[in-house]
Image (cartoon, rainbow over all chains, first blue to last red; front, side, top):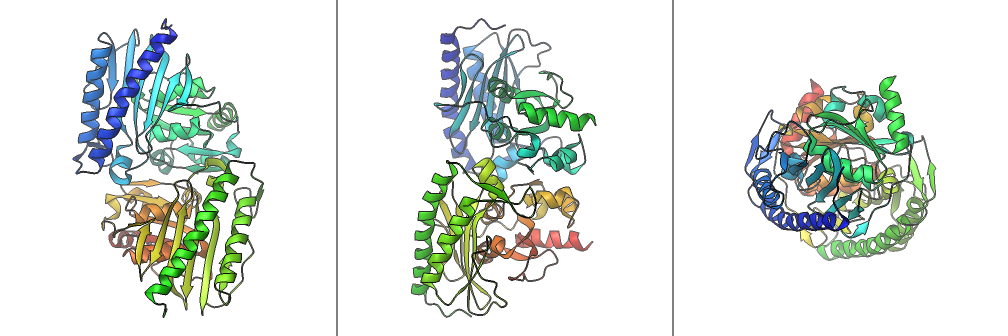
Length: 262
Length: 262
């Protein structure tokens, strides 16, 4: 377990908020210039010069601030830890690259710190609106300076569920049954903006197949607010692998697991 | 055809912008209080006290400003015109009521004026961000004071397409093939916010089954920017009926029609 004092927690939070303030300005400036875009595994898996430069900046700052830590990050400038012992940072330098490139909205920068596999602090920055959702179990969750309180414990049929569009389209993970059972469903196309909607009570749940940098920050913040985070079978997430992640209110989580088992 | 002078066009636009300014404040205030919510045709077809009071306010203003006009509006305070002769106003007092009620975001107030079946002026207000997308063929399209220019003529596989979630989920209108052919797809859950994304070039197209108050304003603005608006078979929309509406860039429109015919 973490042995960080409240003072140490605050110092780490304030430090990362300073990094994010700098990255917000750089990202908005770059977005309005020419973006160099390349594909990774397939035509829909995009990376830009901003993904890479943001990750290099963040990882450089982490290595100076916390030299013994390991870093799990999306674009290849991190480490490949084989255990969650000690300090592990997760970095998604642009979450939702297609939204960043095509919509200029609904993307995020995400950072998280885990110590000995325990969630300590998470940061999800809504870059366009300049709002950082940040905090953890020792300090609570804030939208910039404003404290967030646990959302209503609504059931699946009382709320909106957010789903991965690609997996829904190809009939995977029972997403069609989840969508049919919900009051409504939406496809946002990025993890950070989807987690934010669940944290704020705009949606009762969200599910997608994700890598750990996609869900590490969201898991810290969601659990701190009393939301349930697991894989689609209800099991704890593996922080060193991809998972079919489900974050939801207690009631919606139960509703979705019941659908998935039936 | 309309015989309105540039001065008359400007006077109508400025008048409706004043109404929307008042409605924006009232809608935001009401959203943060208790909403009375009822269902209409089914459990997902919602109406609130704000839908009704906004429509009563707008229709009252229209009847005073343009006494001989007919009004087509969602919540029953309008007329039932049997022809598009003369002045016809279209009013959607809250477009995206589920988003309004559950997400407090991604909803709109929409108004449009047609004269002798010709699109004259349209207004789509993004209430939360306090931005009105307004204009028509005689004045161009503006986001508040900022002129919008025609978006890039991207093909379907170069951009994001927006689709009705319910119709996609139930395999209607070939939406699954459209989604698979696009670079990506998103489900926003409301017409106004979806039209806005197409007008701003964030999406290459949008399709849903809509009533005329859902698409009247969007059609005026989209056509003015050189986008193509038709039904899913490429035919002109019937303003006095529901339609499976498709708005898209020229290239994406051609791509989607080709898919739909195949």
